[in-house]
Length: 187
Image: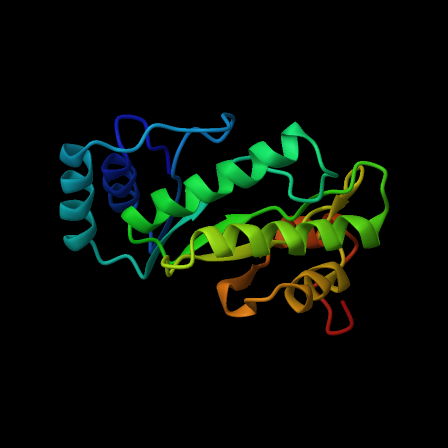
């Protein structure tokens, strides 16, 4: 749901169309860093959250974040952005922050997957007091994006030091695009 006007408005919008689950961005999804919600807007959000019957409200990380990138300014920004998003998700009492694993940018799957696990380790160390978990979202597999194979998600999960901070988010459209025909038992 759109958070235009404040995250609390997203909950109102979700309730107006009878959502059971609402997903929000905790900051502008096309910017590296965001501004924290004001105490007034946090109070409005808390009020809306307590008056709704959603089974879950969760966040989605920004689209610029790429933990699969090699050492670079963009990788550093990705780590700092994800740390901030986990901090914001913590304030919003979100259990999960959905995130695309990242792209290896030509370095190869093995290198990219290792980079992602190491980046998550760094982020988890910086946010160790947060209960927020990252839910790795499978991808369609375009370009050098990782996460279009279940093996990618398993490698990341197995490669991090704190796997209890991870979850998996299955996007059915991405599954189909990546070649998994989930209409069948074999798929």
